[in-house]
Amino acid sequence: MDWIVAKTSGAQRLVGMDKSTGFNAAGSPDLMSRLLDQLQHFGTSYVLLGLCPLAAAFACFCARRERRLTGLVGLVLGLYGAYSAAFGTFEEQYGYGVIVTSVLVVAVMTSEFMERHPRYRRPVNAFGIALLVVTFLLGIRAESITDNGYATALEWVRSHLPSDARVSVTNSTGELAFSDDPRFGVWPSAPLMYANGVRYMLTQSLPTSQGYGYAQPGMLRWLASNATPVFRTDGPTNGATTIWMINPIALQKAAQEGIGAPAGTYETER
Image 1 (cartoon, rainbow, N blue to C red):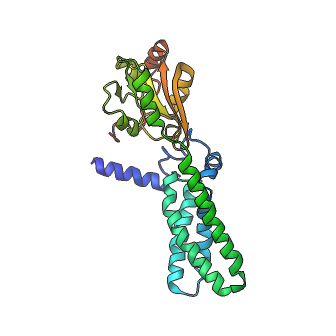
Image 2: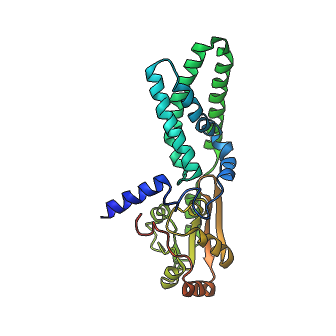
Image 3: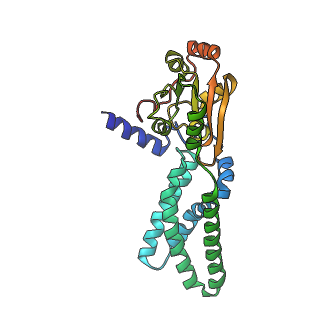
């Protein structure tokens, strides 16, 4: 029964009936601002995403049948990507299949175009070389950026966290990272934290704001008003990794008001 529920929920997210995660979910970051922020890391990937439906549409009219088939597959995936961005559960990982297909359909389109218009061979080659060079440079830049929020948080915990502290994590990654520390547990709402004597919460702003994990996006706003950040490090993958020290009076009041009901994935990802 749980398997059926999980698959049904996945299908609903696939077509956009359930928008609990992704950029179209309530409270999620704006898609355009996220794209602009990540342009410096994945700019050429976004070029391929944009080219996919255009190159695929061109490939659908190629003279050779196998090229037309490749174009049709790319067109379907490209249109689905556009549908997800406009109406569905649009998540960054949804673009992987489109990216791979785009590489194929762009290659097919380029071959067909240069066979029909050989005089454009030089500028097309120049564009391809430039795309590869920029991709290489962006990859080098991405590898040179420090993105180790949990590792840095673990160092702080070992040096500064009181031995009798209780800390709630907010996603399965945090749960795994601190599984050997008995001070950590999964209590993502104010009532759960209050009932278990929690004084600290470990959050990662980007996945939580997009609806991933055990805590609701609104918990981040509540923490900003009622807790003190005692540790914070920023990274491109997870945004701000923060350990909050929670005001006990504010927590008691929030528990009475039922603030921060756990997300729908609470207890299902564990």
